Amino acid sequence: MLARIQSMASGIASKAQAYTTKSIYYSKVVGELSKQVYLKEGMQPPSVSDFQSVYTKLYKQALSVALKPKQSLSMFKNVQKDDVVKYGAYGIQLAGLYSLGEVIGRRKVVGYTNYAAHH
Image (cartoon, rainbow, N blue to C red; front, side, top):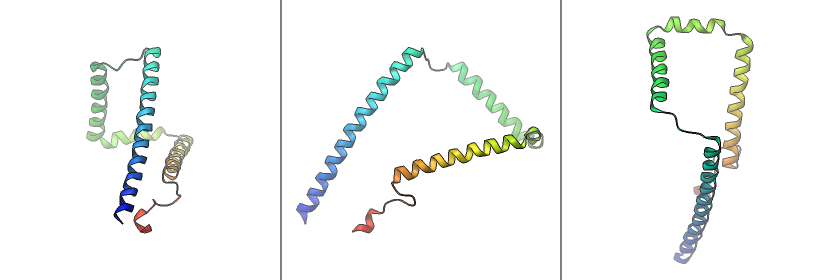
């Protein structure tokens, strides 16, 4: 019994080590590729003043909506039916892609594998 547990533990440890090695390798590849894109495109992080201007504007908008909710709802009067349908379809597509990713990740359509039930 003890030998069986030890062999199972060593098998799990070897699989974990293999996955760790692969994960480290691919993360280094992605990092190097990102560096090349960053340098070729001449990218740079935003400055502090950019952050401040964006978040100050967002804060002011949120504050105006919170203080005057009825006036804030008036901006939806100009929304057309076609726009609602179009953005609703985008939302459904995003939800479907998320669900597809969940199914692929679980390798099952419904629920997760219950490993405790096998013992």
